[in-house]
Picture 1 (cartoon, rainbow, N blue to C red):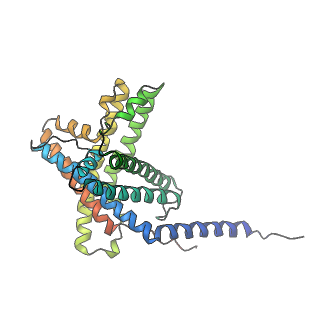
Picture 2: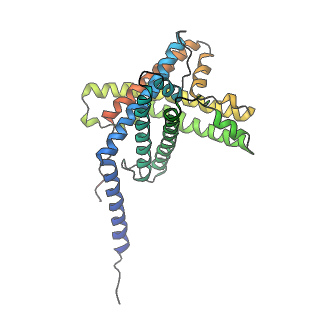
Picture 3: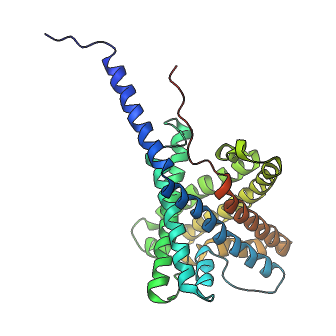
Length: 295
């Protein structure tokens, strides 16, 4: 009769953890995947940089284009060789969305299973879904020669028409305020985003610029996202999807406040800063962290 060692379950668990860690390492260190993820960071930067510039132009009274990510993608498509540019954007969005999935499933950054770690991984999942939806929209532009861009609040129109839809939109809005808004403001203000940067490979000047752009850009994006969440809650309370009109609605809401042009210019500068920060993260970002040695 065989006798199993009391250490067998521990050994099996250690073996499973080792295999998971190996899978994470292989996925994150694959040069094609890492290259796509870094390229995706550049594209993410572009689709924040463009709305930021448009917000600045609106603050100066020189432009009135829609200040959204889909609007930025559509504008790219209207440039010379626009379809080829849209394909390049689609590749970047697909790469960044894939990187979000890898961060959730394989956890190459070792966020773990603590409450905070799971919250961060949930954030990676929502990011992957958001950029996957932008990827699908970009493919639609490529296939159909820039059709009419859906309003950012069209999804809430359908949801509000459903039973309990207003409750769902309100809950989504509150989660957006807490997760995409306030959490990002705190992350930018406290500078915890430095954990995601490979500081050891950065020159002192790069570190200074990374922190300046990260602080300002991430806080500004968090403020805009908080207002987006508030507009969603307003749409739920009034059963009116016109309240839920995305990033451009948030920026226009800022413009309607006292000193609105100044606030809009600040938000636009912040989005520009975040766009530059995101693009530079193609060089600065850590794609994987070595697993801690067992004690």
